[in-house]
Structures are given as C-alpha cells and as structure tokens.
Length: 76
Image 1 (spheres, helix red, strand yellow):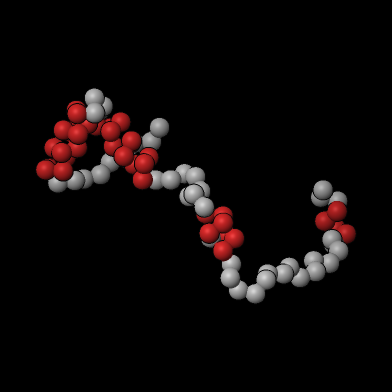
Image 2 (tube, helix red, strand yellow):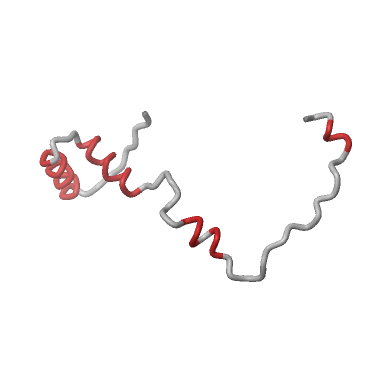
C-alpha cells in the first residue's frame, strides 16, 4: 500500500492525533478513513440519469460506419 507524506500546521496535526485517539485508531488509519469518505471510487448516485442521460439537445445519431476494412478482419 502506498504511503503519502504531507505537511500540516502543528495545531492541525495535534487535532488529527486527538481525533484519532478518540476514535481508537492510528493516525494513519484515521486519515485513510477520512480520505476514503471524500474520494469516491464509484459513480455518484444518479450520475447516469442526471449527467449521461441528461442530454437536452437534439437527439444524438451515429453516422453509418460502413463496412470493415478487409485487412482488419485478419486481426480478429
């Protein structure tokens, strides 16, 4: 697992240590928990209906793609 290093003011570091102690966690685990809550590795709720499916312009159409070039058939 990668390690990240960063700098914070002394008063912030002390508050982090205090919060980690209160949560019965190491500082590393406490910070990882906070970061995981903030960094979303999955699509946000309603992403596809509100963003992807949210096109309000004219309908999108795909132009005719034509036939495959014969030299590409050998690669399949």
